Length: 240
Length: 188
Image (cartoon, rainbow over all chains, first blue to last red; front, side, top):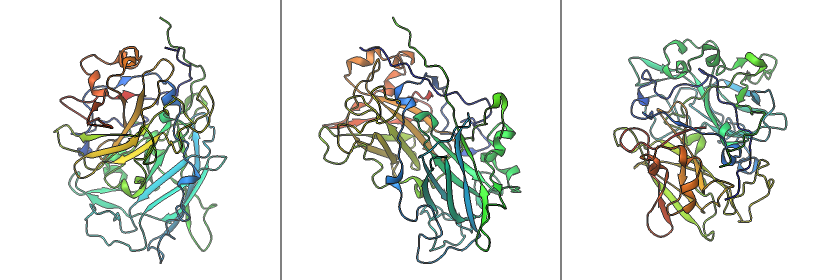
């Protein structure tokens, strides 16, 4: 067999930056979090490559969730924008960003969401864009509502937008949620608080950006997203 | 956003939640290769939770080399170039159905330098605050014996990473998130 090609891996996340899988306050983790510790593996070719999906996945109104139906959805119109970077501050260009969210009343356009808030015939809540050469992206949408869920007595999810990112490698894949500033529901939300490091938690909160607001049209929130950066030195497998 | 060592802090992971299909469902998601591709195989199975119940709101993603062991990516030592197999995407995405089943349409990847043929897998679901990662290896593949990743897996659990034959052109790969027969997951 040929010798492995030496590759530089991606740096592991610092402690506290990501939630633990086993987090009893979020009840659904109980039967889904693996009981065994994962096997730590070094990165080889499959891990340092990844799908470079770009424009071929985009439809004409995927970037603007307010124009996907015959009429405009109800709710506060907002622009959500930012940069995708790696932890060395390098832009992550040409990468697919997918989002999904509830409508302004806090209801998802999904058969299994049956809490009695109104559906909006003009809002589906799914979007996708590709970052530009400098890692920038922008969506137009409406501000999602908060909604109750059965996790604990009187549990409410803070308003949030789900984000999915590929980066440039399998190891950079990230699914997260963007929150809105100063939400009074943070304190009781186990999903938000599952992130151990309070500073890391704040990185999921978008910033209101008056400069980026579109006058007479839409409020604006900046949400920069940071994916893992790269080790400097390629790893050589031991030769036996 | 500044962090020690002049580096930016990472954006934390969060669960996909139960309604991921609004954003992540693609009609052609399971098609790593187009229908009718020579050598096409189906790989699929059931995603189970720790009570042995099917997970009906999960998502499986796969990433693999083409049959020549090549990635259309600048990190490939042979350079980024489209696969010799027309329509090969390398990436697959399949939501689990009402019975926890998922399936992709693909071709067997070639061996990589020093590694047996394999497919990297990410699992997302409500109740998973971060994805979990595993690998699919192929049955009756002599190179499994010398694969460096399989060598690091406890012998009594390695079988959870090897798909099993399931009729002509089909392989079965069940994923057990927790408990008896728990799949080996990888920290990548």
